[in-house]
Image 1 (cartoon, one colour):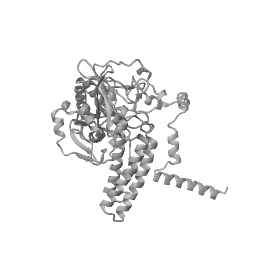
Image 2 (cartoon, helix red, strand yellow):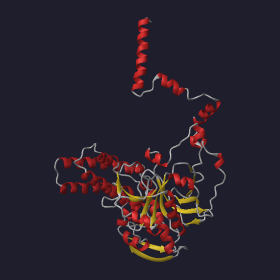
Image 3 (cartoon, one colour):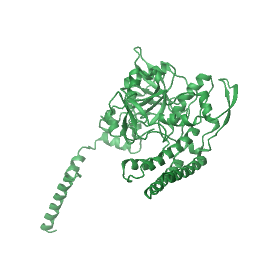
Image 4 (cartoon, one colour):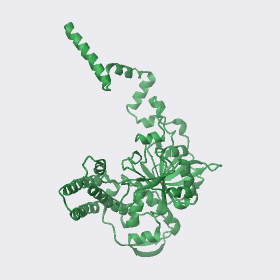
Length: 465
């Protein structure tokens, strides 16, 4: 090779290196520095070999944290029967129904009883479909790359939700016993049905936008929306069954003996056996250090019905929330609770503990983000709802651990429950819904503030349960 050619190649390589550095790329020199951070020691080689065929979580198990976990709780609300949401995102619905179920069982001295999640889920999906279509109509003159329009088409339908769905759906449509509208394959395995309905809704959304662009009158657009919802209703009936308008149900006592038999509508059944003001009797609390505490917030478009109520909550320090939770448990009242359940979960033991896994030793680096930083960077958020029903207090009245009733079946975790240390509670608990009678006056006064409205795509709500 000629010297002139070699010089040209060297010059080109040097220029490429400078350009890479200027563009933020990885230059050859930078690559050498990066590579030097790894040393092929026997220890690192052993970790590489292990990770090649083993789940990192198994290798990171903290053996010092494995001794038998104390399952005693000083204060506990009794429940009867563990529910199972199976392959669906309906934890919010199961949790809300489990809170009501516990009250109904205690009030009427029943044996094991369950509401029908499928019944409520049917109307939840129909109402969410309308929420999307009406949202498309409301934003019909905005461009497709508008942030709200984009968010709507990204999120036309979901089987997830939060407590507002309980008040929105049950408050309007009531409830029925499990046997009146049993689960189906599609209610237990929602992804296929949801995918087809989502695709249809996006198609309908484009159709509505086209009508609006061509100057269609509001009445004509409304007529089209109604016809579209008819298609969605039919799809839901085919997958979930048609919700009953009336039904006959026999109430039985704890020994299984019939008490009375009556005909009900879903709303009269709710009135007789639940009779709760789901909108006015409950306060939603949040521990979000990313936002100012002792303020009231509202999440835009975070509701399950177009004519429902946006999720409004009070943001509080974790210790304030614990005080209300303890009061509720001591008064034998379960609560709607949500958290980032996937973090440090030992699913076999049913234990949530920040010391369950030692990823720092395994990977050779610390993970230092605090709760606020994890929220800001989308690293953590509320992903699962469960029913808070027990706390273990020390002699001074401080909590040592908590327990929730889960909806993953009776064999999951600790007998269908999850136990969490108080330290884990601090880091990964986000939402709690409590009855107003357990909420101090200063917190109730915060609800009188005009809520600070946050956008639907706020980091705290990007991974809703």
